[in-house]
Length: 487
Image (cartoon, rainbow, N blue to C red; front, top):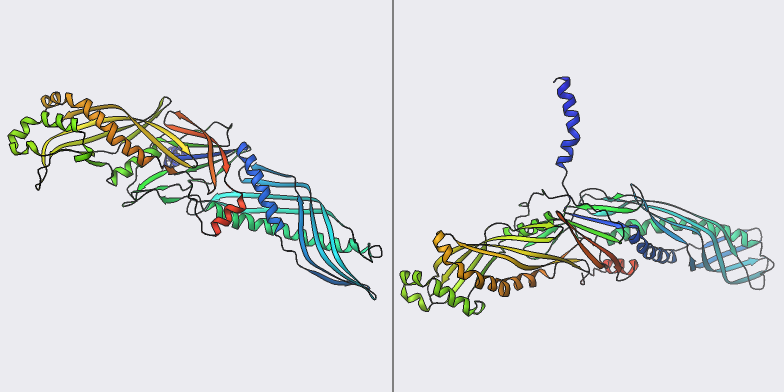
């Protein structure tokens, strides 16, 4: 291989690598404003974890003193905490110049004198530095991959009471030094367990690959590790629906890569056209887009118009069919596609329509077939953490599969068929889609005050966050096997 060819390959390698990257169908950005809310919940959670620290008993002898320290409890925490983004890694939780009050039972023997009672001690100058690294695991799930923790207590003070309080106040320094060392040794293990075990359990409630209904599932696996800057944490998800009966038959993503530039709200969700097209494709492959309209679901005026339109065909086939009910059979012939522009979103649908006579006790008789092209306005909305779509029929056209002449004869059917779609088919679709699909958020955390913006090729939902309960309660629900039924 020549030098020119080698140099060419070297320059093309980054371009080839970029071309093989899978663009995300779904993006989420958490901003500094979102971190402010998370800071409050995190501080409360940390305080609950520290209150549950188990401090071992202390027994020993110092000269003529014998002592026993038992039933150590943390009674009060006054934490000054901060939570910030740690660029390229994750989050940084820090506690500065705070205090922890503990209470414990003491038993002290000095010569022939015995004394016992409770002591309140104050640990001052408490500083905790905890760095949380985020990554995707082998399944594409978000997790805390590593915790770096450093804790220190500047000093600890205790005031003895009881009959010998003044006699052995000097022992307080000895006992509190030991207590400070033990307490300091317990802080980081408690926070490591809280992050690597408890918080990761909560992150497991984010759907990665889950069923949406009995027809399709959705893949929210992370495509890469989160990108963390000083002002945001950005995550790229696959955002792809798939047919449950054939999970390997998926749509290739050629859509625009969503770009999130905003920071004003707590969280942003960006969804490309691929997110919606993969859903439409999967439902199409699952055979969902078929409908038979007859009997009570067939408007009487439309049935009369169909009977009049196809009077000649009926007489030529079999005059006895004149009294047979008329039905319509609708089937989408290709996967519908979505288009997102700054003016809004729409869905284009191509369908085949068969007009059938239904003689009692006999096989249906086809009177005609036609092609139907329709376009729907699609309004995207969020509720909690479920994304839903509401459709409105915007354009509608039918033409015959047999001849141009028959297409002209179908013109009187345009308005009645459009009305039938609006009052029969569209409400059925909207009733089905109003439950929506869950977005990748943990249990107990919802979107509120949502604003939907339409861009060329994608939408962005900006919102604030609402915790339905504290982190501790959410984790306990997960441990109890409870699921989030309100999403």
